[in-house]
Length: 105
Image 1: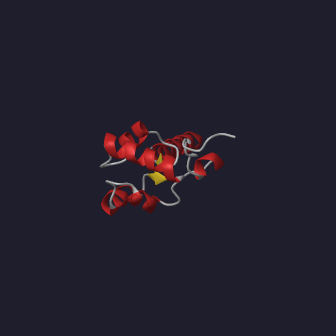
Image 2: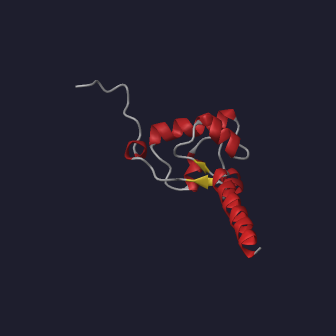
Image 3: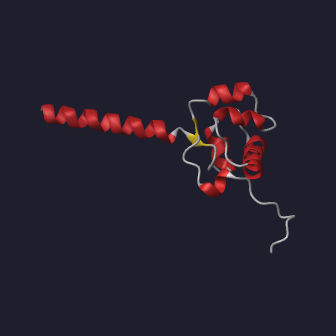
């Protein structure tokens, strides 16, 4: 009987933990659809602006960096702070994409 209770408690703990992780949004890797779905107060235009800013300026280093995106203010960052994750930033994502105006050599 104790083994059954332990097994149930373990399942509840593991299931609860996976829900908490699933509620987070990695602002450095999420596409516009995931940003829109996962962040409160972020619609299609703001989600696209987040992705564009990230592509032009490189990875976000803190959740507060979202305030640099036009249309995202401190209130939006605060109400989503628990959902925002930065994850591990791949080296290629850490720097802005090269400008297409520079000719290849």
